[in-house]
Image (tube, rainbow, N blue to C red):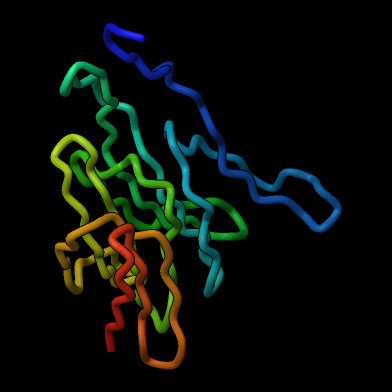
Length: 160
């Protein structure tokens, strides 16, 4: 096989839904182009989505550039508390983790080949810290006061 490889970059329109126990829709919002599993805690639904921005030609094939959008919605009504948009970090499906008022958000940019781990104040969206990683994150978990992060390079990170 030869020639350029072109992934399907047709923007899809995922939605974020809040449902009653009986399955009735309480509210529904656009969820961007790519969505990670939402995180729910303290009456808030945290959504991490990627918004398609542009195609990028790289090494004989085409990649899509996606900006990350992190949004907290009131679980009862869907209202938005704050919004964080991060240039180029929206093509990573790994979901955030919420613990003790902090939202830990894994980010990766395939165009710049850059991985980061962001800690946000869950109430305000302010950055508490922003850490560069050598490889994309695969899973996050919190136990006690420790955040555990695994990455594609096989390393288990532990942050206290």
